Length: 598
Ligand SMILES: Nc1nc2c(ncn2[C@@H]2O[C@H](COP(=O)(O)OP(=O)(O)OP(=O)(O)O)[C@@H](O)[C@H]2O)c(=O)[nH]1
Ligand SMILES: [Mg+2]
Image (tube, rainbow, N blue to C red; front, side, top):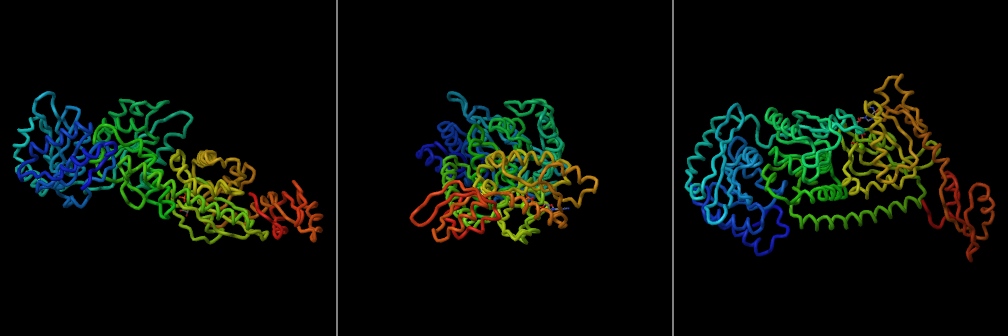
C-alpha cells in the first residue's frame, strides 16, 4: 500500500501510521466512522498537511494521500464505473486550518471526479468535537451538475448521516438524466494574457497560445486579456480580472485556465484557490506537448528532466488541491506515465536523468569528433516551429523525417549527408523548433541535442515567410540562439513557403545579406540555396594540423601558396604545421592530418 502525494520530510513512523489508515473498514450505510476520522485528524496535525482518503462503496479505503499535490495519481478511470454514473468513490479529507467548509476546488473535484460525496473534517480547539462539511451532486439540470453543500455539523452527527439514502437518491438522479459532457471530456480552456508593452502583440501571442492548447488536445472556450505593465505579484492579473475569469468560467463551462506567461508557484496556487479550477501556464502547456511528442529515449529523458525541474518548486504548500481534479494537460509525462509527485523521488530522478544525459552527451561528442575528423562541414537547420525545417531536410536529402502542420512535430535531431553542386559533402541536421517564451527548462534540458546547433559550421535559419508574424518569430529564434550562445554563428536566412506569397511580396523579404526565398514543399529556390551554401563554405577556412614527412617536402611549398601557416615545428618524423585554409582545400591534405580542430 502506498501513500500518495508529497510525503517528503515525513518520518518513517508517521508514514507507517498513515499506511494503517488502509486497515480501517467503514460499515455500509455510514459515510465514515469516528475512529477513522479521528485517526486522520491526529495524523494531519502531526504532519501539518492535509490527509485525504478515498472510500469505495464497500467501505474499504482505496487510497490515502497527503499534502499539496496538483498532479497526484489519484483514482484513475478504472474506479469510475461508467461515464454516466457516479464514481462509487467518496473523498474525505482533513482541513488542518480549522475551517471545514468546502473550497471551490473541493466542489470542482466533486463534479470532475464524480465522487459519491466530498467531505472535509477539521479539528476544533480544545476538547470540542471535530466539525464536518460535505457536498454531493444534488441535481442534474440541462446536462449540468449541481452541488448541494451541508454543514458544518459535528463529527457524530456526520457519522449518523443517512448515507445509503443519499447514495440511492444521487444514483437515481444519474440514471434519469443525461450529462452534457462525458467524463474526462477534452479540456475546455480559457486563455489569459497580459498586454505588456515591448512584448509580442497580445493577440498574436494569445492566438499562438490557442494553437498550443489545441495541439495539446484542449478546446479553447474563451480568451481574456488585460492591459497591465507589470504582473501582479500575488495573482499575476488584477483582482477584478480574477472575478471576470470566474464568471467566464461558469458561462463557458471551462475546466482549465491557461496563462500565456510562466506563473510563479505562489501565483499559480493563489489563482487555483481563488478560482477553484486547474491553472496552468504556457510553460506547462509546451512541456505537455513535448511529453506527448517525445519518441526517442534521449528525447524522453530530456522532456522528463525539464518537466521535473518545472514541477519541483510547485509541489508542497497548503491544500490538497488539484490532485482531485484528475489528470490531463500538465500531469502527463513522456510515454503517458504520470508525473512523479514526491519531492524526494523527484530529486533523485532528476540526478539520475542528469547522469544519463551526461553519458549521451559524451557519446554525441565522440560522434561529432569523428565527423570533424572526416572533414564534413556541419549545417544545422534552425527556426520557429512549423517553419518547414523537416520538409526542407527531406527535400535536400530524402531523409523521410516526419513533417506535419503541427507545432513541435520534430523533437529529435536527424542528421543526413548530402552532396553540394561543387561535389563537397556536408551534413545537414534537422532540430527541434523554437517558439517565443520557450521554457528555459526545456532549453537547458535539450542541450545535449541542441549541441548540434552550437557546433555547426553554418546555420540555415528557416522562416515561414507566409506567416504574418514572421519577423517577430525570427527575433524569437535569434533570442533562443543567443541563449545557446550560437547567435554569432554564420547563418543563411531561408524564407520558406514562397509558394504562398505573391511575386510582389518577395523582394521585400530579401533585404538581408545571405538570404534566399524557397519553397521547401514545391522545390522552388532549392538549387539556389545549395549554391549559396557552396559559396559560403568555399569562403570558410578551417584549421588543420599536419605532419609532413621530410620525403614529401614539396607539399610544404604548395601549402605556402594555399594556406596560412600558423606555426611550424621540425620533429623527428617530419615537419609539423598548424595551418588555416579554405574548407574546400582541406581534402588535399587529409593524408597528413594528425588531429582536427573545429
Ligand atoms: N505551402 C507550403 N507549405 C510548406 C512548405 N514547407 C513546409 N510546409 C508545410 O508546413 C508545415 C510544417 O512543416 P515542417 O517541415 O513539419 O516544419 P518544421 O519546421 O519541421 O516544424 P517543427 O518540427 O514542428 O518545428 C507542414 O504542413 C508542411 O507541409 C512550403 O514551402 N510551402
Ligand atoms: Mg520538424
